[in-house]
Image 1 (tube, rainbow, N blue to C red):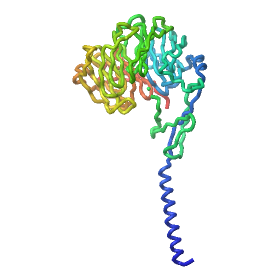
Image 2: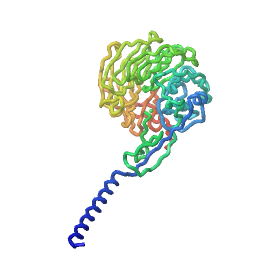
Image 3: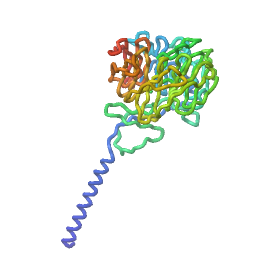
Image 4: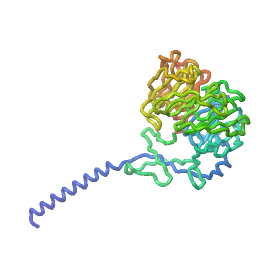
Length: 426
């Protein structure tokens, strides 16, 4: 080989080696070590689920959702899985006494000694006369046809997700296989899942009702169970506690989110506004008022004088607005905005006298003095929790948060006293 040809070959070889090395670098940048929580579904048939509903031994809290209180008991939803029963006779030391496995459960409400809970499209009536020995007494099948969440065409449903944490050296666009779901785990060890997480029965007659939070979609009052779906309002006659009877399903349009009973009315939060329904005829609630706002997630509560609404941006129903809106309730047929206040990441809220508590998500639990709604005062922010919803009764707040249930004494609202915490196990 001629010397000049050899030099040329060496030059070409060097260039190729450089290109291959560079390509390897690019490949390394395309691949990374990633931590995942891998969830694999566990199935049962619909018949098996319906036949084997029962209370079991207490379970650790994993995915805390909605809260409901009745007497000395807290009912805590485990998102899409069931309901924890917590004896709260001593708020400083609440006891987790039992768990009802209910696949696809999201909402609950209580009248007397009956707990009503959804299971996909079914309505369960559960006898809680002795909460430690709760029993499902009736299953009203397909009570919520638009809410059916049975996952398989072959009559099988997902009843549990088995988690396995792993570290994978893979391309950034790696995909789950089969029925698996992968969720990235953050540096602090948390993972991001796709499930999601006040005295409202004033004036109710015909029974002793419990109290739900502002994120509720079930409400009991006036011998009726009211349940909102994504686009409707279902009315059930519960004069026979354990034998609910569907009276009517009223279409409401899409975007329905929450329901809050107060006095002779229902206040319904939607992602485009607030709707007010009169209960003069409880079997056929009639709309008497409405207030529109920009598209946003929207729980709502009232004290009879004002209506308090939180709007949350950055989600499926939000469009850039995160704030508290206060409406006048002087005339329910002509709702007017009194004042708006900016927030960061609001979810549920509760009002008690002049005290307003707001679950501002990642910004913490906020306590306001609202003696003057035109100039409310922030008294305190608890930044050590990420709250989802709150019930405030007689100076005590029960808060559902990302890592469990907290209770606070707010008799001195500028300095909340933590009474207890039931946290999920990490």
